[in-house]
Amino acid sequence: MNEQGKVDKTRRNLIVATSLVGGAAGVGAAVPFVASMWPSERAKAAGAPVSEDIGNLAPGELRVVEWRGKPVWVMKRTPEMLEAIKRADPKVSDPQSKVTSQQPDWARNEFRSLTPDLMVLVGVCTHLGCSPKVKSADDKAEMGADWGGGFYCPCHGSKFDLAGRVFKGSPAPINLEVPKFTLAGTTLTIGVDKESKGA
Image 1 (cartoon, rainbow, N blue to C red):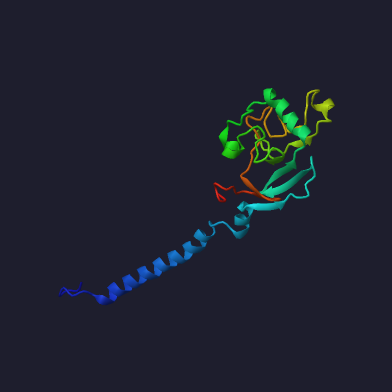
Image 2: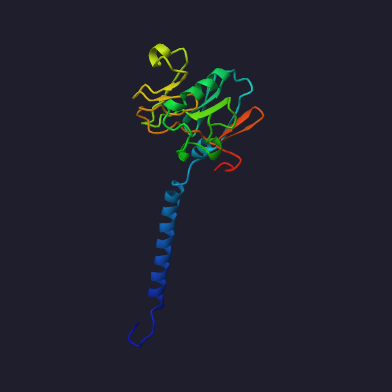
């Protein structure tokens, strides 16, 4: 105010204008920073469901599909493999798949799958994240006389059967993960199931 109590409008307008310009500059600087925190199209695609035609998958063949940057094993199990899973029941730590975080509810069954012959597992050891190797039933000399086939983690020696169930005494604390998936005809879609719709 001046001596007679009148407001100096020029000074007030300058302060308001400066404040507005400073605020706009702050917002302008924040927009790229906030935008950089949003997932990229590549990141969104990496988390999206993936589909694979398994119509020509031969019995006993293991196919590897990448989903969310991880290998997912897909196998059409033979009747002999299914029998080996049954025989492994007393030797595995969680034969009934009670650790619910490792598979969808519909896979809490003997074979941990929608259908007994279809195996779908995330190929990452639940101990320290190494990738186990396939060991067939013929590898008895290395794996033991009662080995019926499955997976062996070379990093620390964890063993898993053909349903991804961990053997007792292995460093891995829980079974291999079964991802959500659907099967429509011969099209396997990993990352979605009828309950989750992709969640």
